[in-house]
Amino acid sequence: MTGRHADKVVASVAEALAPLRDGMTILVGGFGLSGNPEALIRGVIERGVRDLTIVSNNAGNLGKGLALWLKAGIVRKVICSYIGNNDDLHTRMASGEIAVEITPQGTLAERMRAAGAGIPAFYTPTGVGTEVERGKPTQEFDGRRYLLERALHGDVALVRAHKADRFGNLRFWRTARNFNPVMATAAKLTLVECDHLVELGAIDPDDVHLSGIHVHRIVHVPEHENAFEYRTVRKRP
Amino acid sequence: MTASSPEPTPWSTADMARRAAREIPAGAIVNLGIGLPTQVGDYLPDGHAWLHSENGLLGIGPFPYEGDEDPNLINAGKQTITVVSGGATFDSASSFAMIRGGHVDLAILGAMQVSATGDLANWAVPGGKVMGIGGAMDLASGCRHVIAMMQHVTKKNEHKLVLACDYPLTAARVVSLVITDLGVFQPTGDGFRVVDLAPGVTREHAQARTGAPLG
Image (cartoon, rainbow over all chains, first blue to last red; front, side, top):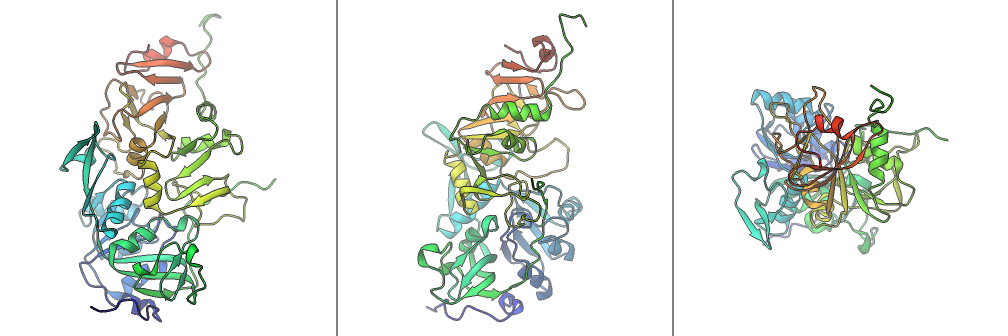
């Protein structure tokens, strides 16, 4: 047995990403462009790995976020819930360069929650009677039909946190939390990019959103673009 | 047109949103879908209901004032928003557990087709560009009640209230009410019951634009 929870803070994005290999499945936090691990996403391109399977709700948009990986030609497959106006994905899906598996958003989240919690598969009502049911076993419980979905594991998770302590206890900011914590639980190796790095004890134990048990490397990245997708405002009265 | 049959004046999208707001009881937990349903929030009195956003927020407030917008505080349509006092944020798995677990009272969702049996089709056009599913299937099958909002017919005057959907389904037998520019309709299994009609819209006018019997 080896302890995996000593000295998690690394000095650079490159050091955090050193364990990545070609062909890995990488879970990437974020909903649209919010809560994206921006520096880790850029760093993966510099790391030079390819043939990746990415799991992300949207796989980037507006040429930003994971769209950088799509444009760099390092992605073989995308598992996501929504493509929308992500033209970088539409064009590569149409050409056959990238295989796309579309999963209902709640099922996507629950498949990773199950993976992190040691549950190999689960029954859900979502998608029953639709194209999502195709090829999946179904079972009736108490008069309602459910379909069987499998857990979704990652080799690596890339996570964006607002605040991390040196053990990897995390706090998130507003709706930047989204898929980040559940992805952290579902990967063999979880790499965290945090806006603020604090000492042990600086986060009250009752205020920890995700325990450091799910975190393996931490890199402090104080500056982020935090791109807007749809800046919607009202006039001051 | 005679004086006794005035020209039909279908509801505007604002009228539809105002009508949909009337369906929301005080103290309800409501998820408003992307697009037209989002506007329903504009017609709810402050504190009337709690608005849920599946990307991880309960307690959506109005759009932020210029200069206050935060790219990491957004709704499911990725628009910048605010949080009301008493609001809470959570992760995606918790958010969809709320939906799937039946803790969200009502979803108001955009629609492409609704069938007489309450089937909802709102995620894909046959032969069209694949946009994805997002939270639509979870919301449609998980929320306790589902109201669909849409134009009564397509731009090519094709029926959208139909006997059986020919677009890919989002969920089967879930829609309890349909609000269109022509009125409010309830799926009955073999047709739609007319609950309300826009000004000047007659039953005959609506029936001619509906692919199932109106009762």
